[in-house]
Length: 131
Image 1 (cartoon, rainbow, N blue to C red):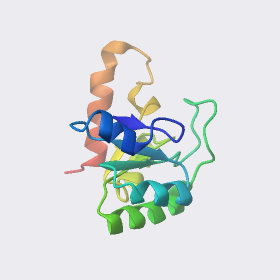
Image 2 (image 1 turned 135 degrees about the vertical axis):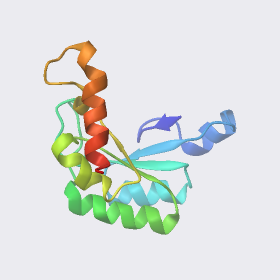
Image 3 (image 1 turned 30 degrees about the vertical axis):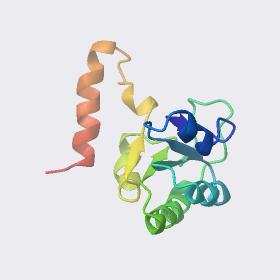
Image 4 (image 1 turned 135 degrees about the horizontal axis):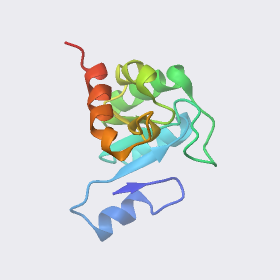
């Protein structure tokens, strides 16, 4: 289960559904530090870059913010997910610092055609894992 800053507290999620893994969204150093103290199964940080998919998005933290978040998460031994404004051109740079990346608009092919999504995603993955 993934919870945001204004959702159920991690402790309540764990009490209500102890078999579920739980992750927490964070948007800055303070929220990240507080989330890490709760020992979730993973933390998400973002937006890394400006994003158009969320109208009320928090300010972007950039690569410098991601590097700091990665240091904090690794010190706590908790996986870090980067999200927000990550496209094909930015994915490899972001992936160098995060354990996982989450993308939304990067999944939509330029053609906008549903039948092109699979090939588009395969290209994204290939760009993250060069031969």
